[in-house]
Length: 125
Length: 104
Image (cartoon, rainbow over all chains, first blue to last red; front, side, top):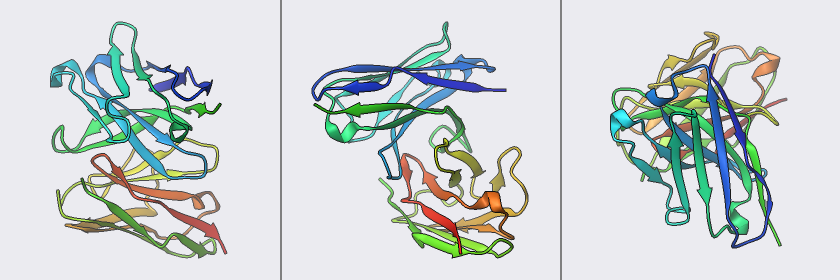
């Protein structure tokens, strides 16, 4: 059974940096793309970023709202996905979920089949 | 970028009733690909449907979905108490705003 556990959230001041981790077990981590999705308090889901497996070139994509500030990475030897968040803003306050990404007909058609419980990031002075 | 619009925002129904949720895409990017998720308060989202109409592992058959082009539908044939939740559609890097199914 796949398990995903996020960590690294907390209270952080605007402009500072934070790194989130997503530790995965129960699967061959290197075979899968991973994604981060966030949810501001009382709001809907917002996709943040994904990173494909090395078999698909390890390509990365970002939502426009975080591009240039956030960096996704992965360590297949440790089964961990990371989200480095720089220049944090109050509007980045959210629960951050990591999820396993699956493909339907091909790598451009993806969905998220297993989710962690999330880690809360609060950006406030 | 595709924009997904879900309606209604809130659906008030009684257990045993049928729920029909809509998700409309701003333009047709792929006619064969959409996913649906369920989220209960304080919990992570759970995948219900992928590829427009394929149920995820463990999802009961009272959940069904259909659609193509820009119009997609999630149907819950007979609402069980555990089905009252928020439902999101997703295509590529876009999520709909969600439909809350609440007890009437």
